[in-house]
Length: 248
Length: 288
Image 1 (cartoon, chains in turn cyan, purple):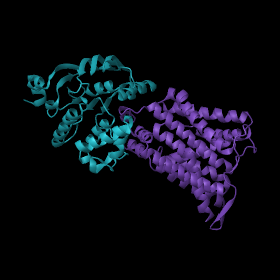
Image 2: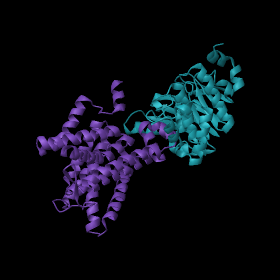
Image 3: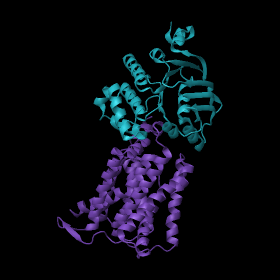
Image 4: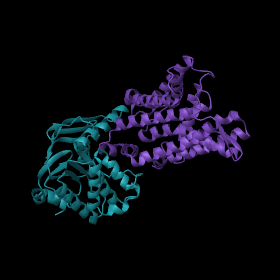
């Protein structure tokens, strides 16, 4: 469904992503793991196209020079140079790191803004679905996004992304800064979303333990390059992964 | 009593003038310094439609508003899109455009006392012993309608909600498929239509003069700065504050000082509370 070929991203002369080749299979959950500064978020921004807007803004004010090389194919079509909104229309929706909830809009409005690309019918159905997988949101409908807790915001952010009718859902560090209980609950919800709706999911995470069991295939990034890949089982049994991510 | 009534009227006129400016800034962070010029061309546009093309009043208003929407969208599409993201250039570009439009009108001889628009309804009534003409009542009525319409639009309409999303977090909105250029064009079009609408409501109270363009711009900026840039609640509150102070000044000091109030308000706000009454975002930045 998604194929990334020879992708390289530079900030000025610093290499953020070094020649990554990867793909996400339709209907599967693909994981990308790595420490801070391994290039996970840059990868997500590049796939969703946000990096092109950042690049344009930096050029306008004469700031950092950003270079993107290589190609990204979505459903066999080259999308490397498409605007973020165009990519979203094709079904690539990013649920960003640190959630980026609209703080002054209520939870319900956040979901409705998320439904910008959806038809009325789709929006209604998806909203019902969001409340079924995240029942706590039901009670928080009228509360402003900025007043929600981290876990509530994360549920809302995933719900908001679902409202945009994704074919490929990009989750950037969805478990960042959450309690262990919340981590387990969200990881389960992500697996359920994948199983119930068939949406392809690409998930990045620094902390692999709760996520590794739910993915089908995974990549390990280090210093911008993919150093290891394999199925969930292979990764869990790999001694390097064990020592680095499970502390065994 | 007359202070109260005329204060309210004056406040609503200020709110009407400023709402377009606030809206555009609040949504797309674009300072539209051509706002005053748009106000004036609407006036002359309607006048021209009525007197040169002999259209009826309602039709002229409608055409003028549509024209304003197109001009606003055009300003973004052909001018601002090229300097987007460079705040100073945006101000210079829109201000230059406004200046060019106003001075072009002056050069073509659109000045003097000859250009007036008819009031909507003739006549006046007495409220608590104070005579007030119906056009001024219309100012209040349309002010209320516009503010509530904009509130409903941004809370219940899909595009309105998307505009608010864009205003809060541009990238997060983009990730959901909302296009920033498209939203900015819509914001500019709506902002310009609102500028035009305020002109249509307010101009029948006096003559259409080129200078009004500069005054409207200064007043709009004053309202926005006092209220906190981009904040609606703030803008409406600020319109009331400045509006009443202006009327009190006219009554107790001298009518010349009426413009001074607005300028003084800008200066005082910038010294005492640079983020304005409701400038939440800026305040956070200052704290950091």
